Length: 175
Image 1 (cartoon, rainbow, N blue to C red):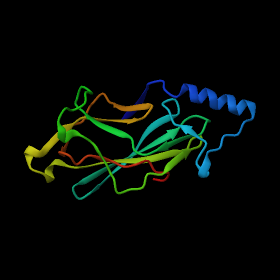
Image 2: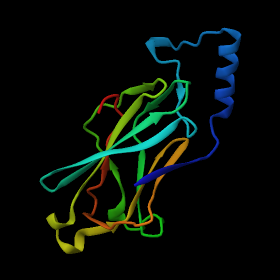
Image 3: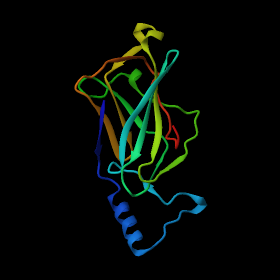
Image 4: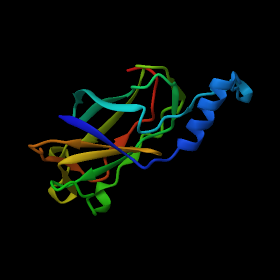
């Protein structure tokens, strides 16, 4: 499966300011020991499908966002995920909404060059719920504030899941 990225072009002003600060020798520091890294944007990130695991009725798809640039950047919180039909359009059903895995901490993850942040997309397969309570999707689209990642495949595969069970984890600095 191949993954590609689309961007919205946000963050260029802050990136230019960061480059000017580096060239002029100005050090950037934030209070409280926070990172001086700029938020990651589409030009920095590559989405990598790592693997999938199944535990009972739940399936976990593990992904990494890899920093492809020499400039370090920061991720925080959750990616947004949307389930898509065979034509790549979002599913309209309320049961197709992807929630967040809320019982996990949401650390800031600073990515040096070639470093990765990890997240998981999880769902319950449809054989564990009544037929009337399932939804089918072909693709999943992930978004982080300035980067949109979507799967591309010549052969879309249908996945049936229980309505309302799709969740995404926060970013983390380890697999």
